[in-house]
Amino acid sequence: MDEIQKNLLEQVAGLHEVPAGAYNIRANGASVGRNTTANIDIVTKEDCQGIDILIKSGTKKESVHIPVVLSQSGLTEMVYNDFHVGDDCDVTIVAGCGIHNSGDSESRHDGIHSFFIGRNSHVKYVEKHYGSGDGKGERIMNPQTVVHLGENSFMEMETVQIRGVDSTKRSTQATLEDGAKLVITEKLMTHGSQYAESSFNVDLNGAGSSANLISRAVAKEDSKQLFLAKINGNNRCAGHSECDAIIMDNAKISAIPEITANHLDAALIHEAAIGKIAGDQIIKLMTLGLTEAEAEAQIVNGFLK
Image (cartoon, rainbow, N blue to C red; front, top):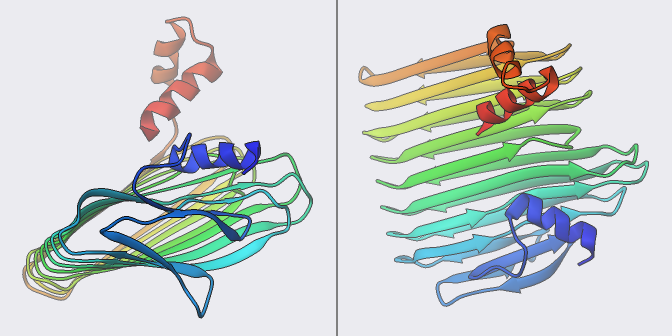
């Protein structure tokens, strides 16, 4: 991998060197590194681009890294990655995509990640998106995530995009069985003329299942954002969605939460708030010696932490 690809890898997966545990690193449409363990196998799909990640029941305190980097202008790809997590597991999965585009042609990565999580398992999933390069060609990412949570399983999802992606449409669909729990935390910042769309559709099918969707977003300059969150309570369950956004300059943000109760004991809540940075916050920081721009940056960084 060249220095540009190594920098992208650090940005999206926090990797300075080859990670411990299982991993599959993809660069410019091809696998450039792979490792498996006694409990985690990674198999190349034969019918399409992508991999199957097979995690044995009882696997504890192990990790899988599957980052993707693109540094070739004009490259577009679609990959399908399936995660089969057995029962009684406790694993961390780190994904993410970085695109460096210094040319005039569009560079694009689309992917579908499907999770089939067994009973009593805990999965932490981290996905980061990052773009760089001074070319006129757009950097586009359209990830789809499909989650099937088995009985009493728990999945934490952290998605982050704070720089360099011109257009993204992120879709997450989830079904939860009895006692399953899903927590999703999204952090997003757009600037220039960028567009970002996040959509969630969660079916709480199991008794005692729960979902908590939290989005923190900042839109600057002429960028646009759309947040869609739909929770269907189909049993005794608890669901909550929250979109909290800061709007700046000429940006536009829409938040459209939807909750549907199909059961008497479905407890569902949605919240959405969009507003500008309060003037007194900026003034307070400026009295400490910061410029107005530095004060705004401090507030935004604190909001997205």
